[in-house]
Amino acid sequence: MDARELIRRYEAGERDFHEVELSQTDLSGARLIGVDLSGADLCGANLCGAVLNRANLTGANLTGADLTWTDLSNAMLAGAILRDVRVSAAPIIGACLAASATTSDQVA
Image 1 (tube, rainbow, N blue to C red):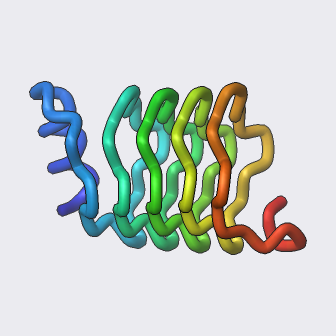
Image 2: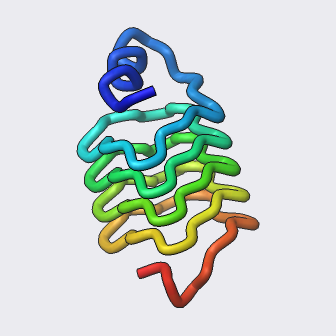
């Protein structure tokens, strides 16, 4: 699935995109409030400035993703792989990060 297809389906009311393949996808600036991306492959995805509050990213692979300015307020990130992500200025108020796989010296 590419970014245009995901956004088209989201705008049509679909919210369940668990285990979808979105590696290297450009979703910068996308508004995906309450989306279910649990178990999704988001390796290297550009999510810069995206609005993902209340999103379910449980178990998602976000290795190398750009989360700069991404709104992750109240998002579920338990078990997500967050290696080498860029997260500067990303609002994460109320986000659940319990048991996320991170490498602390690489999360900036």
